[in-house]
Length: 422
View (tube, rainbow, N blue to C red):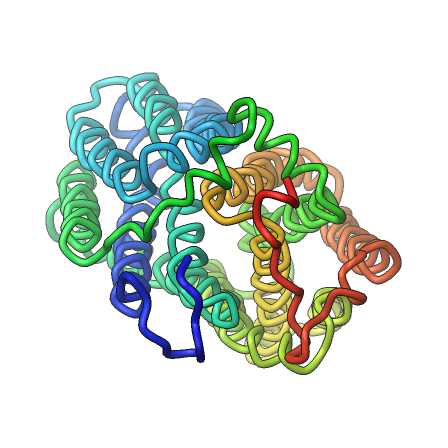
């Protein structure tokens, strides 16, 4: 990218306009996605599944298949994006979501939903690509801010989506809610189409490698990159472990049956808002402290908040502790993506963020299944696993992350030098 003489120096493309495009598109897409996904068990029941176990099976399979397939293909789509442009790949993904969500409204059997969700996984991945687009467009000293803004939109969308979906389901029915979701993706497509401009490509930093696989191997071989991927997997695993068990835990605390859904929704929203605030606070922290310290301390604080959460019983206390937990998760996530992004050479952001997002999607796909199985014994087993993973990731990062010696004057990781680092 062109050299910058300051944080707001002119660039070949407007990084602020690009930032607006990918942030708004991410918000619309993630809001639309979570608008209908919580309604999936009810929709599967409408499609003929009567047994509770059968409904749970199809809902679980349908929810898990998309991130599972996307996790496998995300690095490949990233390499394609590096070759042909990230804007084109995001537009491809959003168009596929428009078509598939609209088609889901015509499903007649539960397996139709599963098949469409599997197909969706083949074309998904725009979430990771928008992170790459934000990171590539922004000046390097603003990378943490750019990533944090996109991640904030990806947090706040799911916080609002279920509420909007619940209202729509009562007004137009679940089937028609899928058409509304398709409309959200259409708006996201228009935003990217009209507002985003791909920065100039750097063919010398990408095309000199033998192949896309060689680029991926070179990125994976960078000091600490695999550690960052592992940290992102662990953070995502813990973050998404609450979905299958939080309503059950709230119920066991003694809340009345009619208030369980409301209290659970408040707690989910508190965690999401806390994480969004953490995403925003990360940049200031990275300017003062090393990435190693920011990630390790934020995850340890998240673990402490989770431990206090287990000692409380009131809704207000539960919400406050989950907000603190979410803030720690948000800081750790943005810091990990920023560290990984700064290790990626110019022109290979799609591949690099495809690898990082793939590790997050693996955590997203595995966590609900593992935690659902563990919760059959006792719910405390899930929380114990979460605490253990947070402490383990924090300790490994504190002891093994090799980035402190490469910090710049602002406390950020020193940038990659390009082709020579491959």
